[in-house]
Image 1 (cartoon, rainbow, N blue to C red):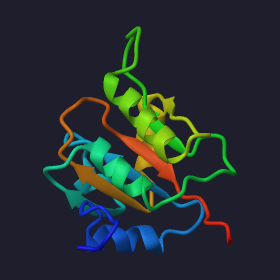
Image 2 (cartoon, rainbow, N blue to C red):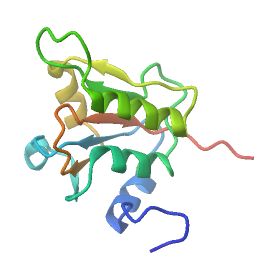
Image 3 (cartoon, rainbow, N blue to C red):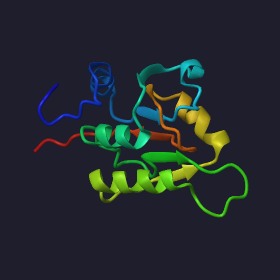
Image 4 (cartoon, rainbow, N blue to C red):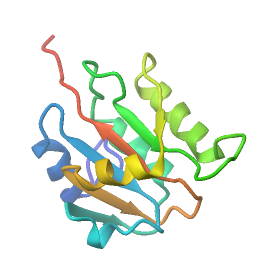
Length: 143
């Protein structure tokens, strides 16, 4: 355990976050996502929600300010009039850490290839549908 760092940020996950470079992406996915077969490095955080993991990651990782959509969730499949509540939760967490940024959503056929090309996937036990998000790492500017 470290002072000021969430215990959700395991040694493996901290290594992944530190090893990522500017512009690399990390996917946080729900319990239904095929994380094992997706391809990139897989970090399992069983027993934790995607929202808690997002909050922990954004406590140490900046989002990319040089791109239009540094945080992307998956839109609902079919003709549904509103977004699932978890996407509003993702948006609130993003605003907490990066007030000038927002969550974008893309259709499932566009989301899966992007999520599967990420530097790593963090598999959670999130049970809420559409509990998936891709984050693009930004830079820390010198003081």
